[in-house]
Amino acid sequence: MIKILLLLFFLISAPTVFHSKAQTKKIDNCDFFDTVVNNHNQIFQSSGIPSAIEMVLKHCKAVGFNFYDLQNEWQNKTDGSFRDFDNKELYGITFSQKFNLPRNANFPIDSLFQTIEDELKSGKKVIIALQVETGWPIFVINKQTSDGEFVSYSKLGSHTLILRNIKDIIKKSNGTEIMTYSTLPLK
Image 1 (spheres, rainbow, N blue to C red):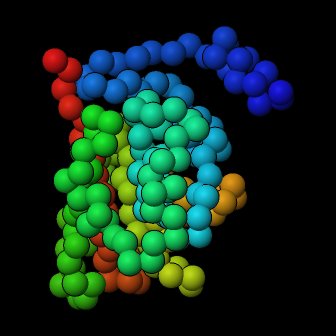
Image 2 (image 1 turned 90 degrees about the vertical axis):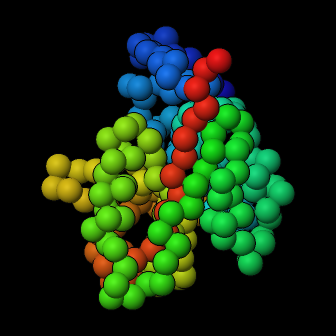
């Protein structure tokens, strides 16, 4: 009941501006953390990839906040990767795997950082695998700070994970892969 009241208050008090550049609509002045991340859960321990894709779909208003179909289909699949969603169109949004390269001294880290910056500047989010102590959890990069660092979110059940030292993590692991997306133009 409290969530419903807060949502109603937010909808009444917050001005919304919709853009129609793509088939889906995104509310420009709403905060990704408050509107998507806080209302999303990773429902299986190993469903990080579809969970991140669901967050992007929710951000783009392609699906509702109760959408968990991708995670329910994936469940605890442990042999999945970004490749499972590469060039896959879901609800008007096509996802693309990028930087699926060997992680070594030759990894094009500067090019990766520039790609992330370009996607963020265009108003999009970037899905990324980040090496931490527990493995390679999947995060959604939301924004770049004034000092050039990236801020990303992930979910572990209903618990939100926030990382703000993405560039250091990527450098220590000699690179990583990302997923970007594009929307279909209106007809």
